[in-house]
Amino acid sequence: MKPLILALALAAAPFAALAEGETHRVAIHVDENDPQVMNMALNNASNVASYYAEQGDEVVIEIVTYGPGLNMLSVENSPVADRIAQMSLEMPQLSFAACGNTLDAMEAKAGHDVPLLEEAKVVPSGVVRLIELQEEGYAYVRP
Image (cartoon, rainbow, N blue to C red):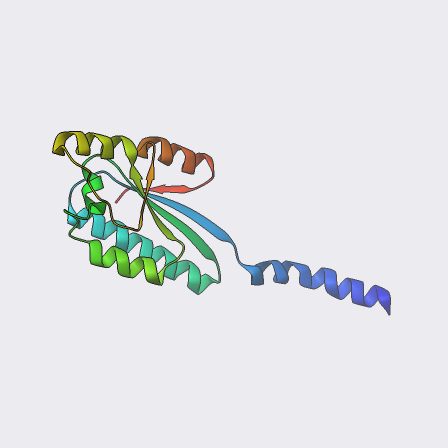
């Protein structure tokens, strides 16, 4: 009887792996001060998350902003702040990286601190963050 149980367990192993699902990783790059570009990035994130959820998979998504794109995460300038807040509540696998180099330059030019949305995590360099994510196996998307 034990060989039969072992054979059944081995035969079912590939299906058990499928049931667990796969984890995908996506880095989305935003470097434009354009709400249409940011909304496309947010649409991409939402669509990717929905697709993989339907497949039984997970996805980790990081939107990386630098240069003029950092305005999309600025408390004072972001035209998409409400959408970012809502999506962050609905999608815990979604995160936002803000370029520290760009933030420093913006603050120097403004002569004061530039507050970012609470969803933003400052990284030393947006470009370096994209490189790191790709080295970690993240797919790269630029809307």
